[in-house]
Length: 412
Image 1 (tube, rainbow, N blue to C red):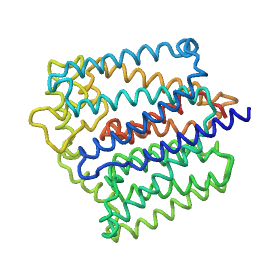
Image 2: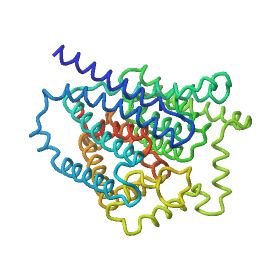
Image 3: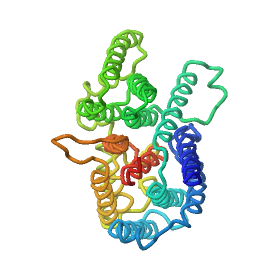
Image 4: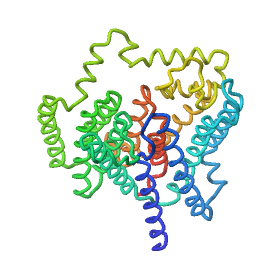
């Protein structure tokens, strides 16, 4: 038992360190394209390192018959989806099979697929310290926030050219998902964890307001609404008072900050209010989506291949993804691939509700920290209707982590 616990502690630390470095968003920050390429290769190497280590740990405990019997539909749909992804890649009308950019995207997809299953098997067999993973996410986000502040307000620091992401939209997504995972710590029996979670939620909320991300703010509001519904299950009055006192102080502080013209969220709202068309309100996303549909003509079944948007004729050279996860799925894998991946996501969500939503006892639900992973998945997916959450490496790995925690058994 002692050896098992020691091994589980090491696995938990390994996963937490991996998630911490992914959270830093390491990569070239010149353009979206350079960031996508550099951060993808960095993260892919890190993913395969942890895939190999965890596979070696899991192999002696692997029960393939049991695994298939309990996940037969998911495994069959997953393998069929991989076949569709490969077919869309090989049959793409816009590039040859050895195109380097398409190969990067294909490698990213296959690596994510492998990472999900290895993490799922690990959390199904071992009791992983989920709280440690949540702390790793919070720490990396606070470092990114500090880096962003120093980068924009201290020229000497900016000259250091530290390869950590400073894109306000991706930082907004990261702050949003940090709030979601912080909610998980509110269910910890330790008062210190609850205080850290409250501080993290309040600070990240203020950070997103200052960044001005509309999509990430929608995700945060979704998280806070669910949090309000869960307040009665936390059973900590002083924590509730602390949380809302913090939000009140935050509101008063923002009145002062807005007057200093530091907060960009108000300007983002003004741009939305001043928009004269739906296309301008969506920052030309409607135009982009219709552009994708035009190029999908005659290729609806399998799509035009991974990363094919980059090779569409007359494309805006600054755009490298569809800014909507469903349209991105259609573009890359067609109707077949989109139906398969959506079916897998629905199965994962239903499985998580069966495992973690609790049992009804006298009209009461029993929640656990796993519920934060559902909040992370839901908020990321909502924002992915307008952004590249399912495209860029960092938020997509957060999605994988959220799905793994949500679908894995509760081993508290």
